[in-house]
Amino acid sequence: MARSRTDNLNIAVLLPCYNEAATIGAVVQGFRATLPDAAIHVYDNNSTDGTALQAMLAGAHVVRERRQGKGHVVRRMFADIEADIYIIADGDGTYAPEDAEELVRTLLTERADMVVGTRRGVHADAGRQGHALGNRLFNLLYRMIFGPDFTDIFSGYRAFSRRFVKSFPAVSGGFEIETEMSVHASRLKLPVSELELDYGRRPEGSHSKLSTFRDGAKILWMFAMLMKETRPFAFFSAISATFMLASLGFMAPVLAEYFETGLVSRMPTWVLSTALMMISFMLFTAGVILDSVARARAEQLRIHYIGLERPSAIKAPLGDAGPVSRAPPGKADAA
Image 1: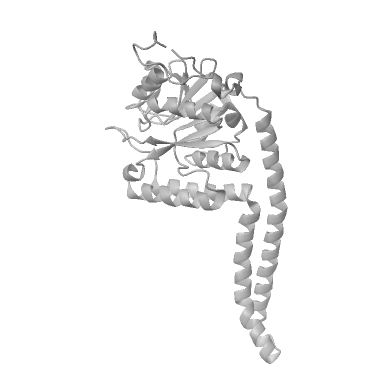
Image 2 (image 1 turned 90 degrees about the vertical axis):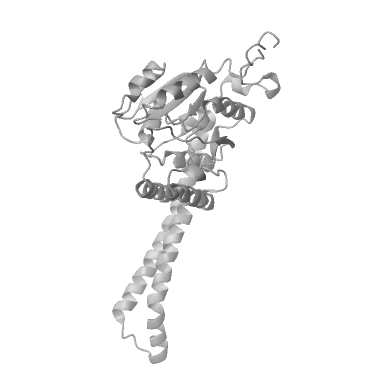
């Protein structure tokens, strides 16, 4: 067998689960077969269908997280688990464990801090047309606001370096966590990569936990909050422009009347327009100040990220490493 770059690396597979008893056993077994040396962690998020038992029987380390929501589970995972490489996937069987080797290989060969397994065919199998439309719109909105780094910000199949995981200040509580991961990488200009993978269908008895409108509203709110925190000048300038346009709309007829007659008969309208203009200036000033604060925070996060040392096996020259995958059966001796 050719020497693998993962021989001296600690790999952790993270599987957040909520009522996935029908699929979690097969998912754990799939990752055990693909990455036999990896530690597989299942965090059960208050399941009521025996998910934890099925995961334990399949050989996973099981922990219960009582705060409901995927974001809470991921935050707990990233805080609890120490590893060199982290792979996160869903427990519903829609992501193939066999693709984990390719994610790890891409992470190592491209020296990336995050590799996103973009979902091939997700729009055709999003369960409902609302989900497919939401995927397109939110990915387009992300690229408009935060940049073109990603084409599938909602993919739950990702590989991370330790530096990414330990520098990621997760604040999301639900499915918005993937968006926050993407923004974190874009904000700090981390090396990232995308790998197109097949997206499977849920088996019989497994159901999506997503709500088109409720979770869509949460994600939209997260977009606004992340824009406020990472791009405050653009955020507050947009609101400032809205107030300024409203002020000018109220102000125009009053000024026209004044220049024509020399009188201001609609004093309340004039006072309102002046107040709106003052609010616009205050919002613009706040955006300028907070932009400097956001830059300082990003610099601090970047310094912390750089201060986290890479494992020596990852720092090794690329030419010294063999393939990540294991040799096919029957060819180990030849290798």
